[in-house]
Amino acid sequence: MSLKIGKYEIKYPIVQGGMGVGVSWGNLAGTVSAAGGLGTISSVGTGYYDNCRFVKKLVEGRPLGVENTHSREALIEIFKNARKICGDAPLACNILHVITDYKRVVIDAIDAGANIIVTGAGLPTDLAKIVAEKCKDMANDVAIVPIVSSGKALKVISRFWQRAGRLPDAIIVEGPLSGGHQGAKEEDLFKPEHSLESILVDVVAERDKWGTMPVIAAGGIWDKADVDRIMALGADAVQLGTRFALTYEGDASDEFKQVLLDANEEDIKIVKSPVGYPARALNTPLIKNLEPRKILCRSNCIVPCNHGVGATEVGYCIADSLGDGVLGKLENGLFFCGANVYKAKKLQHVQEIIDELK
Image: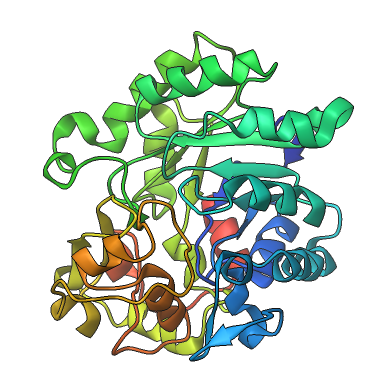
């Protein structure tokens, strides 16, 4: 069973979720695509790539400004390195809709060679128009995929994209057990109607009104039993993040991976984020000591934070903290993870995971 996204054929219906800052860059995404899945490069915080080698200006070791934080030059290099591993196999790029310079980063990803653009963290109603303007007569060469958490969200996105002459080439429906930012309010996350099983059925029903594009289920999927169960409910494919983060080929530091491997179930917390959504992370020293405090904005990385206003309210800068996390700096690092991270006992190779799941 394969997965078709637009014009692209993926050998197995297995997608690696985009994980920033620096968890899924060229090595991980390239290896997943080479193994027959769909590798996804995260566009978030590319300025941190290769010890900030592509950053034109640093302040206290941090990329300064959005053009350095979400670096075009680094993203292009990340894709080059992924291509050395996977050749012409399809590669996706995950671009959060809430980032500053969203349109510019979409164009950067297309220039870098992304075959598929994946966007969540908001309603990307403008993505189809951006791609159409950039690619003109070759717009279908770039597949576009929204991440949604309800049929209503899919309906809104599809209406806007239809006006630009496109519809989603696939849909990722993400449930509340995923790592990082969530698609529901914290008080609603664990209500039955927000479970992946419930919203999957809702999204499949809405998809059927628009076409036959595949629905990819994400959030809490860990093993073959989860795959079989969720596909029996109507999913055409699955997306996993945390399991692929915990591979030898993952781009994060060994220290980052060890923090996740050491996690117990009680260490997993829902935290507030400057992005404006609740998020799932490990209860490391940063989270334990959170309180409102003045945060200096260096990166201007996301629109909702409003140059540090959101960061000051929650007590941390998401760019700085994710940057420290991927480097394995326990004291100040932010460590996003899925709800099942405690099940991981060792690192694996990407090929082992693909073989198990396929």
